[in-house]
Length: 207
Image (cartoon, rainbow, N blue to C red; front, side, top):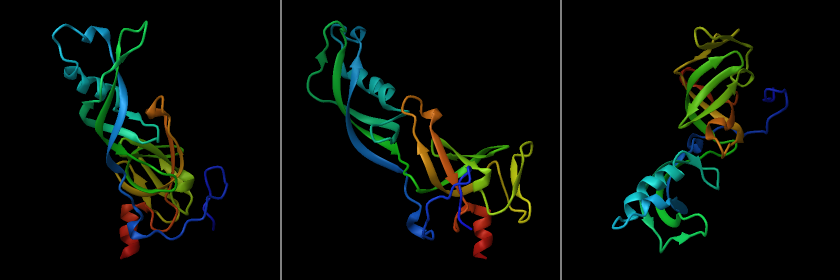
C-alpha cells in the first residue's frame, strides 16, 4: 500500500532505509555577518570589542540563517575592519566573523527525536531545538487511537504504541521554516516507511 500524507495524497517513493542514512544534523561553520552597535556603547575610553560578543550572540543565536539553518551557538567573534556609521542613525554597523553551531534539516531526511506531546491529531516530536508533527495517519500501517490523558497513541490491531518520552526515527516530508519566528516553523514527519518508527518497534523487528 503506498504511503500517503494526512490529506490522503501519495508521498514520494522512498528506497529502503540504509544504516548510514540518518545524518548528522549539527555542523560547525565559520560565518560573517553585520551587527549594530548602538551609540550608547561608544563611550570615551571604552573598547567596542568589549560589546561585540554579547551583541553578536543576541543578533544571531536562535535564528535561521540565509540557508534556513538554525543557529544554536556562536563564539570567537572577531571584528572585520572598521565599522560604518549611517547618517541619522548614530550606531556603528560592524562586520564580524564568528564560529557557529548550526542545526540543519533537509526535505526527506531521516531524523531521530523524542515524543514531547500527544494530542488528538498526532504526536509532536522534539528534534534538536525544533518541534515536528508526526500526524496520526503517518505513525504506522494501522488505525490508531489517541489517549491524550495517558500521552499515548496505540494501533488498534497491532497494539503497538507510541507515547511521551519515546524515541522515534522518522523522515521529514514537509519543511517550512519561519525565519521571523522559528517557533512557528512547520515540520511534518512520517514513520510508516520500513526501518522507521518507535525504537521499541525497531528492536522487535530485528529480533
